[in-house]
Length: 72
Image 1 (cartoon, rainbow, N blue to C red):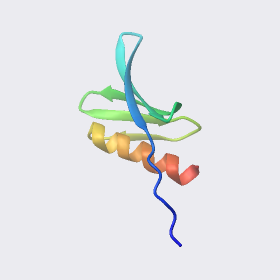
Image 2 (image 1 turned 120 degrees about the vertical axis):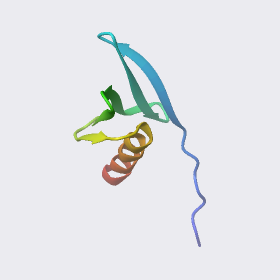
Image 3 (image 1 turned 60 degrees about the vertical axis):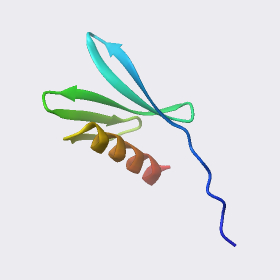
Image 4 (image 1 turned 90 degrees about the vertical axis):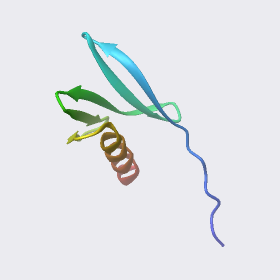
């Protein structure tokens, strides 16, 4: 038997920190990471460890989701 696919609510919220706008990525109501724009790149920080620099916001979100699922 196959399992039913469960839908998961992923949400991105913007927050102002020290005059910088950062995006926070939530799964359900749990914060999993933050994305900070830097020049033409995006610095990502996974809550619980791990940093990455992405070329686009989509790449940063994708990396956070992959790392979260890998370590869950």
